[in-house]
Image (cartoon, rainbow, N blue to C red; front, side, top):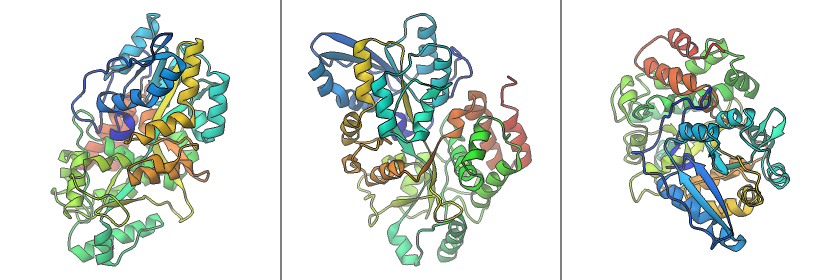
Length: 438
């Protein structure tokens, strides 16, 4: 499954060739996708990525007509072992023409080692015209632009039942303080916990907790502190990071608040992150926090709409005017500067490709040339509008930007220990020890 729809998370690497892969929000690993037989001859361009199974089929369908028209055969290979294999192939002199990177940190690692070619002029032009400065920066390494973004998603959605909100006489909050008041009001109405929360995800258990913390660091401490935290200029033990833990803990560590439909606070670690969707749809809980891909986990027949069975609003900020969000996506980098490769890169950075892929369903893009109406899912349409809003402050998922030993290691483990009752200060010290010494 692709990153955008099912939040496929892969641990960033500190060094090429280091083995380390983690999945979150995915089902059982699928077989790597075969090549796309677009075109009837001429030039061939190979693309390697983490997108597999049905999403890989949609990816290949998205460029097939264009490739046929341009006489280019695009052969795509998707792998669950992307990082290890890409590092091995690059070092062995046998890389693909193009790679779709699931994290900017990994992308920057390859660029800084001179494996990637600077992006063609047309790609840079498209990026500057159709993407915000935040996104362009993720494709820029040491002042050189190497690649444009591809797909994107937004996290921090709070899912709820519109009918229940109407029954309880409550409204969507516009600030974090109002969010806390909403929790208390709902609990007074139902006489029990309002929230259901799930951190379980196999070997990646704990990752949903990192998303909670990232959302609160960005909203409470601001984007500059968020960036400093990612760069380790602000450690986990900093009071500003502890404040985010305290704010999240006030919701998910309070037995009065969780875990509706599943048990006590510690049941968070044994509750699969996707299982909160049917619990919400069935009315077992009133609120849950998860990215837009949660829409794929609701029971068949669930209407996801503002007046439907379930809907979602973005976790608010400190004030009603705050528009800071976290999310994820992919960056496209090239190991080849062949003419055919440059044509493919230009197409993938264009609104034409974005509209083609999004119209097939299941994903979003931050390309501002994308028509939101092409998204079939109303939450995805809302996601696109947020991504395209010039006033939106976007920050990439922090744990995906941190070294793998932290972002997919001590951070995940720390969230599990925290839920199990380990004191916040001890958890913060434990997570901090995951940072590489150099």
